[in-house]
Structures are given as C-alpha cells and as structure tokens.
Image 1 (tube, rainbow, N blue to C red):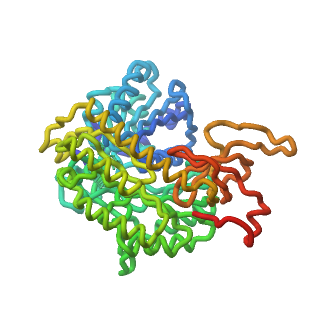
Image 2 (image 1 turned 180 degrees about the vertical axis):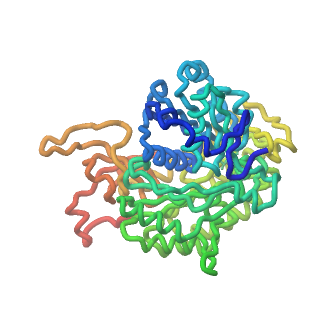
Image 3 (image 1 turned 180 degrees about the horizontal axis):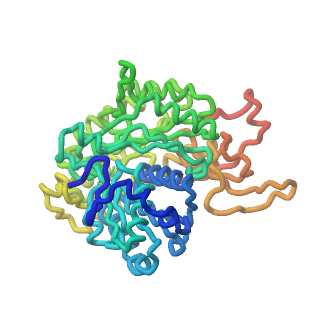
Length: 513
Ligand code: 5AD
Ligand code: SF4
C-alpha cells in the first residue's frame, strides 16, 4: 500500500537518518551529470523544469548524453498507451549499462509512476525509485537514498506515491498530492521571457476515458498569495508572458482571508504585476467557462484572446459515453458567449476519435463541429484504452486501429483546411507579436552593417498564432509589429514593420491582436 508523504523501500525500510551514517563521499561520489527525458503535457514540462532546477542547485549539470549521465530521470505520461511504451523502451535500453556502473541512479517520475507504481520495478528492475506526481519534492532525497543502497551493494526500490482515489478519506487522498512549485532557475524555462505557473493540480471531472484524476489526484487550487509572489519573482527575472496551468484551469477556486478567488480574480491580480505583458491559461473545461472570466479577458489587455477548451467529440451520444457533462448545444452556447464578449478570440480544441460508441455517423458530427466552431487548431487523439478508467471497465475498445487512423486523418484534413482559411484572413494585416527568439530553421543571413544577426524569428500573436519573420535576435522578449504576407495552416509568415511606422500612431493599418 502506498504511503502518504513517506517513501517506502520495497525490499527493506531505510529511514532518513541512514543518510547521516554514511561517509559523505559514498553519497556524493558520482559525476553529477543529469539526464532527463520528459513526455506528455505542459504540466510535465513544468515538473521537469522544477526538478532539474532543484538538482542544479545541488550541483547537478544537465547533459543530453544519456551514456555519460550517472543520474537519469524519466518524467512520464499515462494518458495514452504509446507514451508508456516509449518510456519502457527507453528503460529497456538502459538495462545492461546500469548494471555495469553502480553509480548510475535511475528514477521514474510522473503519471506512469503514480499509475504503475511497483509494476515499474517488475518491468524494469534497473529502476531505483518511482516517484508520483505529488511527491516531486522528494526527488533529490530519493536519488541519495538510491546511492546509499548501491554503496551497500543493495538493490534500491524506493516508492513514493500518492493515495489511490478510493484508498482513504478525501482529505487524506488530497494531502497525499502536493503541488511542487519551488523558486526556479531562469535557465530552465522554455525561453527567458516565458514561464509556466501552476495554479492548480489534479482533476475531479472523471471523464470516462481519462487517467488524470487518478494520476494527478483531487483538484486543488494554490493560494493567490503564492501565485502572485511567484509571478512577481518571474517578472523580476525578465519574464514577459506567464501561462497559468491547470488540468481544468478555469475551475480554479481558492478561499483566502475569507474571500473566494476565481480565475477571473487571479487574472486581475496578475495584470497589476509590472513587467508582465501577457497572461495565458490552459486548459479550460467547457462547463466552467463563466461569463465573469470572459469579461475579465475582455477588460484586461494583457490577457490573451485565446482559449483552449476541448470539445472532445461532436456527437452527444459519444459525449455521454465520455461523461463530459455537457452537450454540443451547451458548447455552442459557450462559443456564442465567447464570440459576443471576445470578438476575434481564438479557440482550440482536443478531440478523441474511435472512442467506444463512436459510429461513422457520430464521427461525421465531430467533423461538422470543426467546421461549425472553426477552431484555430485541434489536437486529435486516437482513443487509447486506459486500465482503471470507467471507459475501460464498461466498454470494449472495439474500433480498429485502421478506422481510428482514418478518422484521425479526416479530422486533421478538415481542421487544416479551416486553419488555413482563417489564417488567410490575416494577410495584409498587422499583428503584435511577442518575439520568442530564433525559429527552428537556423540563422539565415548575417546583417553586414552590424554585428547583429538577421535570422528567422518566431513569436506568437495575442490570439496565439505562430508568426515567423526575419529580424534581429535582439528583439527576443519584446513585442514586434509584424505585417502578414503569407500563411500555412499552422503559421503566419510576415515582415517586421519599421520602427518609424511603429512610432507613428497616426499612420497606418490598425494593429490587431
Ligand atoms: N485516449 C486518447 N486520448 C485521450 N486523452 C485523454 N485520455 C485519452 C485516452 N484515453 C486526450 C484528451 C485530452 C488530451 C490531453 O488527451 O483529448 O484533452
Ligand atoms: Fe481528463 Fe476530463 Fe480531467 Fe481533462 S477534464 S484531465 S480529460 S478527466
């Protein structure tokens, strides 16, 4: 049985006092090279960022070379089966090498750790510790414990995980999942100007197909006080854009000093923080898209006009199987409110194809919903049966992979057509783009008149569209005005508007979002 806030060695219990009984070099004699592989969502990316930042403070150094690393971490995802396969095959490749070097410590963290627990040691005996999503603060201690075991020639099998959703009282289960949000290392962020900020953990929606309510535990919102102080620190470090994270981020609720704070209240508080230019939040749940939130976005210029609100399916019968708790009509009503209050707001969605109960006719309704709601983009997933979920218990996974693949491609094709059509509307218009830095396609030319490089830069508009254009990398972190001259389904291509033009408010085309 998993323990709350306590680690268990499955072969022998060792208490934390054991750490002090060994000479320091036994614990520290290793090369401090850390390799981490992360799969899954933005929440996982943030978790990895925070764990790495903590380990760097303890002298670790990141390496991309798994062979030289003596500390190897896998941050895992369980949402679909193939994400798990990927990790087990990476672990398989380490099986032989880890036996040769007793200094190598291998840890598995994240959703698969919480879901599979001991099974991971059975499938991958070279793993030293398994740490769930709510126990990340323990990672450095678990690494040290593993080293102690190795130094004694013992096998290390430390397990630190939260309680299952039926394994105790609600408060106990909730307590066993702790949000992990230490102050972080600026070098670990996706870019120096952007940062994720967790505002809540867990999920209580229990969609029938989804493992997240058990892998991430009960819904818990962080206090506005903690969030605000974190955003202030980030702003002092040069962050311009914060993305607030939660599995159902718009369900955020926290009572502080007797006052209830919702996401709209939080947006107002963050909006007042000097230095922050943009505020985004993902992922929203359709039923919690309240009017106060839409009005806050309307009234706060720093809030982006972009919402990620997964519909998941365009057919009410399938939505019912999915236990999503709304109908297509409810979603339509939400979209009408979004369009009325926030004209020009982009909305993106997730869809699942091949969910049990999906017929050819219901699949057509999903295609139709993309045409009707004109999503900016959609993430489309083939249904993957997840053991332990209601869908796995109740319905056979009867739709073949071939059909899922075909439906997936049909969805992508329609979505691409819509995205390209809507992107084409931007041709000839100007957008305010938060410049992230050089695009993936490397430096294009060197500006001979100065030392600055003229390269292809990438950034995002206020409606979350990816914009590429040529410019100096010195623009990174600033808002540039870019005129669009070409588009693809995923990208707007433009050229930067001259400074003269920018500084002349009397002239010109209106600057859009
Ligand atoms: N199979 C396929 N896709 C899934 N998702 C969640 N669970 C499953 C599953 N079992 C998708 C949903 C969710 C996204 C993060 O992953 O669309 O919004
Ligand atoms: Fe999973 Fe549904 Fe929660 Fe999203 S809202 S994390 S799909 S259970």
